[in-house]
Image (cartoon, rainbow, N blue to C red):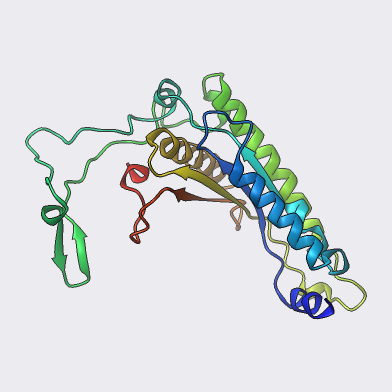
Length: 237
């Protein structure tokens, strides 16, 4: 066991993470999030992280939130339709063979580019107060509140350097990684993850335009995906 603890002590302390599940219509339960929570607690116990500086706070900088997908009616309030039609006069390729062409750098997507905005209503919204009252607005505030707590705990954990630590080696990483878990076969789940991510990044970029370091980053992990090395097209749309 001391070997595991010595190994952990040499690894940089990870950033704060918030995992959000947008897959289930019943948002109160998520098998994936419960499994991740269990595995994190098991790792903590098996490696006796309570004896390792900084790493003893690992479980306090990871949180989980199950939201479920938004309805199409809700999504239409906050973003442009996520199933846009190809403009008239342009015919979309009918097969993958027609869609992908060759180039010097490999295969390229020849599907016509569709120009449309993401945000619906007033693109110049600068904060969440301008959004219509509803569960989406409440969830955005809940997410930011959780991120603030995780960020504070992550920064505080960096001061746990023990007797042999050096203050100059402290790296107070204030970035919170938000990981959305979406179903690649469910349009509403993909659209929900993309909408939350877009609004969170938009708000954070505006609120922290003067900061040298961004305080939030987003990514989407898709389950039920064919895993061919590219993101689901419906997520990008």
